[in-house]
Length: 141
Image (tube, rainbow, N blue to C red; front, top):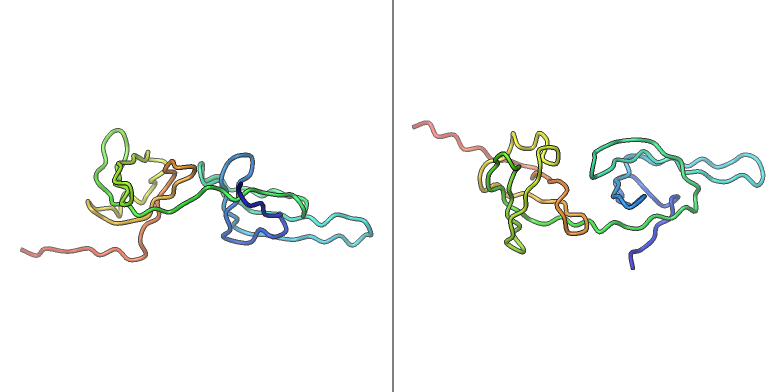
């Protein structure tokens, strides 16, 4: 069973699952009531990892979220065609295809064989993470 985390414990850069979709917390603000008996509220600025939509939502402090089944797997870029961009999972050696929305502008920085990290949610690829450093070779011949 997945671990549960209370809304008051959600911090910046933390991942959680809300309404069966994975989210990343971009900012967290806790409002404690001044009146007796008031509820502590937590306002989260969150990004949907499937759609990249960003919005604010307020939760009660004791609302609970599941931890999402998110993993980063090493992969290499193979090629792009009309179906999407194709990557090779370096652990299972299966080919995975990401559509243009999932890859975004990262395609501008990819060269054949480039190593990167693929985000997988429930075993399905949902996006990628480029390496911090990218080396370009210039052949002056």
